[in-house]
Length: 162
Image 1 (tube, rainbow, N blue to C red):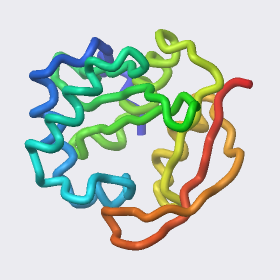
Image 2 (image 1 turned 90 degrees about the vertical axis):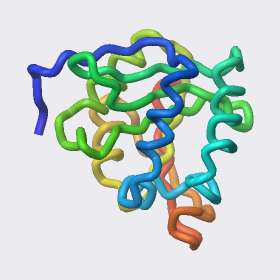
Image 3 (image 1 turned 30 degrees about the vertical axis):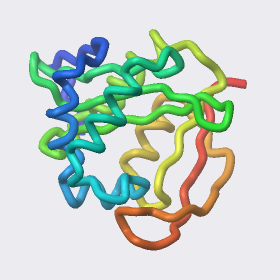
Image 4 (image 1 turned 60 degrees about the vertical axis):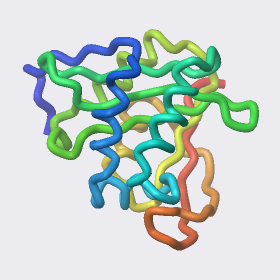
């Protein structure tokens, strides 16, 4: 379901946003779907240290997602093993409203690095849809240890651009 009436905006992430993002990622269902999370998602000091450092990394483009003047998530481009990767997180209270899809489309207008990759757990169908609606193509799969599930799972790899 998409809520076309929501006003979705992106802005550069600020250090103050990180405390809000930390609360979002404590949600057990969201963690399960994200799968590849920190070993201890309740360690606020480690979370704030890691993401404060990333805010100062020129290879990372961190944006805060705002819907109708409320912070509802984050989206970022980072570099992993030489490849540009995309990541996003929406507060579970706002799932199913098309926010991730709109935010990703807006983000891809300002983040022009291509190719850009997305990775998603094999059973995170909503996130797979978000990537596909934004033009990403599934190009492969990989296996990795998912901290949130305490087991190895399959992840799908998506790519946008050549």
